[in-house]
Amino acid sequence: MRKVVFILFLVSFQFIFAQPDSLFFKIEDISVPKWTHKNKASMLMSEVAFVNWNSGGSNSISALINFESALKYRYKHLIWSSLLITRYGVNSQENQGLRKTDDIIDISSTLGYKKEEYTNWYYSARFNFKTQFTAGYNYPDESNVLSSFMAPGYLFVGGGIEYGKNIDKFSLYFSPLTIKTTFVLDSKLANAGSFGVTPAVYDSDGNVLVAGERIRNEVGILLTSAYEVQVFENVFLGNYVSFYSDYLNDFGNIDVDWQINLDFKVNNFIKANFGSHLKYDNDIKTQVETSVEGEYDIKGAKVQWKQLLGVGVVVDF
Image 1 (tube, rainbow, N blue to C red):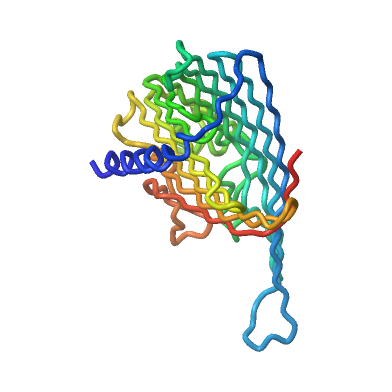
Image 2 (image 1 turned 45 degrees about the vertical axis):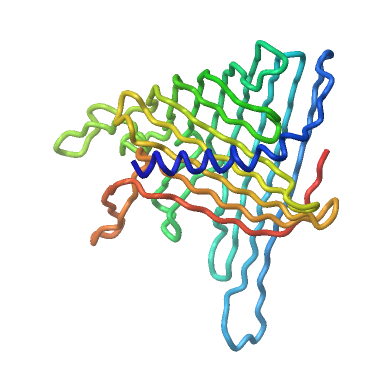
């Protein structure tokens, strides 16, 4: 019940606050095909250095590289939008090696069609794929790989309806039928049953009799909402949230993915960014270190949260 209330609160919040802005949207000429292509590249950096600092401290430097590409097509009652997001961050501290702080590949595409010019509802089909570039670790332990490229990889394909009075700024998408495919192409992680795949079967000597599954398919219900607004002249807010529940396995258990991004524009090339990313996925179990060095116990899923604050250079083209 708490999860349902939480979902209704988030969606209602976005719907209510999106409406005043959408009442004044500019009517575009949709009688001719129109392509829109925008790219954005940015690098955020932070650095701390100490010399004879009596309070102590550790020298460190971090960098986050981000690239986004958006392609949109609009013609009469048809819209098609695609988005590529790639991000990679590293951090280096004194007496420590280079460590990863962020890593994502996110590709999405939505095709929508409405029957009448003045309706705000679209019949929509949606595709989304997510994975990462490199291996992830529970630092400082770099011998135990937690994730890697295509381990996991997530593919969502589905269809439904989408509300968007001013769809570039606010959208609400509901799909009663979405296929979610989880890829775990790393054999060690697949054998361990990571990310919800079926683990390997071993004999009494620890030899693999049946290898762990590398692909898991689910069929469920998906609800997403996106809201973007220019809060002030140089402040941009983006709020993105999605909820997914599998029909076949523990229906009612909801996976949550919620992102809030605030961009503070100093000028055409300098900006500051604050980001919050909260996730919950019941298939992602946690590892707890045991009394035996190098061995871990698998525990239940937990809420994951990541926060980002940085200043850097951004280029739109």
